[in-house]
Length: 178
Image (cartoon, rainbow, N blue to C red; front, side, top):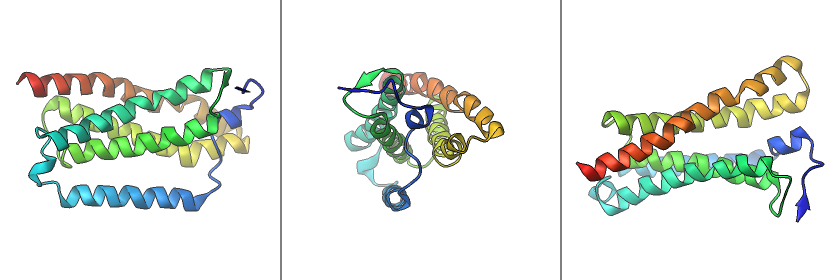
């Protein structure tokens, strides 16, 4: 087991945006997935009440719930998987989980609870992208103003996640109860 107690806050925050080709590849794949979902949004197989569409929503919700693993790993003193790897998995699960939720919703607003869940998923993903491309480099720069923003960033990222979990539970319950 690797001991991470000696890691600096910059290392715990995740890797620097050092491999733009990797980010471009992920963005390209994400746009392909969203494009496919947009093109097939009226397909009966992706109906949220049919199994493929239901599993798309369930998989997206579980992926977005799994992103909490990064927060838990960040606070652990030791672990087999480096924090930087957890950070990358956190980003991928957050992005593709949100994409699966949007495809499950057929790119449209539905009932109040499903709209809450959709909006929360999109806000969590958007605030995560802000952290990836603005806040992590700011933390590495040492700029005091940017560091103050970094310290308050979780107020933007965590509340939509806290809304997302009960909204998804209510959405799933309502979809099966009615």
